[in-house]
Amino acid sequence: MTAPLTVVASQRPDGTLVLACVGEIDMSNAGALEEALAGADGGGTVLVDLSAVEYLDSAGLTVLFSHVERIRLVANPLIEPVLTISGLAELTTVEGLTDDKGEDVGQ
Image (cartoon, rainbow, N blue to C red; front, side):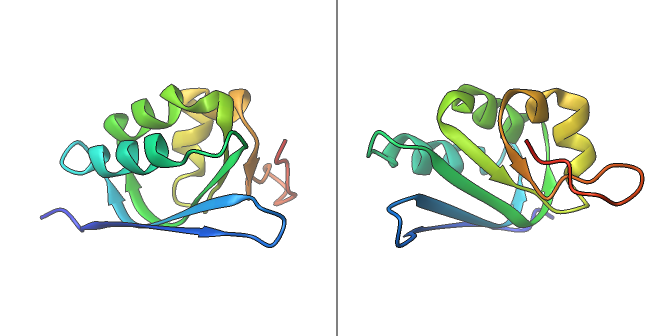
């Protein structure tokens, strides 16, 4: 059974829009993330906080790739490999990525 996805929008004092995602992002609910990103109008970069995401499949990656030019990501160790292997980490800034020595390598 799929864990539900919750996407909560907030704004940092500097004006950065933050979309905090909690749960799993898969084909059953990737549309909610797409709607949140599509509705994130403001012309600036959107910070997508994936630190509480437990699972991310290709449907979720497709949504992130389609908005790659205007997003930054926050990752957790569970989804780091997915972001790296997919190539998404090479196309946008990902905070929380670490190298083999445990050092931060976010772009």
